[in-house]
Length: 423
Image (cartoon, rainbow, N blue to C red; front, side, top):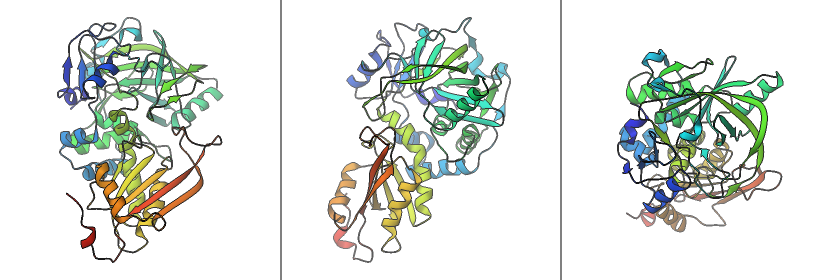
C-alpha cells in the first residue's frame, strides 16, 4: 500500500489549473470532494491531490469503525517498532532525481490570497540528530527555488533545531510529501516525551497492512518512507527569515514571525508523482490534526471511566474541542471524564461528555444530547487561567485561556426511558 492507492477515488480535474489559488477555488466549487489535478500550469509532469484523508474515508479504506481506528492508533503509540531498511534501487521515491533542486516546478500551492505565497502544508519534516529522530508537520513557505521558511512551534523539532544551533551546526532533515496515511497520521502525533514517530508509523503499518514499513536512507543519513511521492534532502540552517501571514487551521490569519530557513539540497520523486496539497482549515487538515489526538484523550479518560469513543469536532478545528462518549458507573464519572480529557489534550478548550448512545460525530445529535440531558448550572465545569493553544486567536496575551466542560450524560441512576436517543 502507498499514498497513491488512497488517491484512486479522487475526481480527476483535467482542465488547466494554476497553483495560485486554483486548487482552493476548484475545491470550493465542487464542495471539497477528493480532487486530483492533472494539468497544472506551473508544474508540467506533476499532479496534485487534495481532500482525500478524512476520518470517514480512512475507516472505510481500512475496514475499521471510528472506535477501532482510535484503538489501533493508541496501540501503535504504545508498541513502536523499527521499519525495514531497503536500498535506493528498491525505493520508489528515488525513481527520479532533479539535476538541481527547483521547488517552483513542483505544484506547491498558494491557497488563500491572505497567505504570504506558496506553502507546503502537507509535507512532513523528518529530522535526525544523534539518537533522536522526529517526524512532524510544519508549514513551509516557498521563498526560492531551493529555499523554504518553516514555522517551528516549540516542540521536538524546535528543540533539535535549537540544540544544533547552539553547537553552531545545521540540522540534517528530509522533507517528505505523499506518504502513506499511516505515516501522515503518526507525523501529526505529539508526545510529552521524545518519541520516534517513524517507529510508531511502522507499528501502525504492520498492524493495518500486515507488512513492514519500508524506509530508505537519503544522502544526509535521514530515513524516509521508501514509497512516498517526493523526498527533499535538506538542512535547517542558522538563518531566520519572515514567515507568514498564513491562514491556519482555525480559518484565521496567523502572524508574521522570524522562523528558520531550510536549504533544500536535492529533490527526488516517483514516476508521474502526486503532490499532496492540504487546504488549510479544510476537513482534511482538521482530520490529520485531530484524529491522532483522540487516542491520547481516550487513554486519559479510560483511567477514570469506561470511554468508548472520542471525536475532535470540525467546528473546533479538529483541535480545540472534542466530544467524548462514556459508559458511566458512578455519579461523578462525567465530571472526571471532563477533567481527564482536558488533561489528555492540553490545547483543547472545550469538551462535551455524552453517553455512548450518541453519535458523537453528528453535531445535531450531540446538540440534542445537550438540550435534553444537560443543565447549565448543574452540568458545566469552567476552568480559568489555563494554558491555551497558540492556534486559538482568542487566547489572552499571556497565552492563557478559560476552558469549559459540558456533562450531557443522563443523570446517573435515573430511568433512561425519558432520555431515549433520537434516530
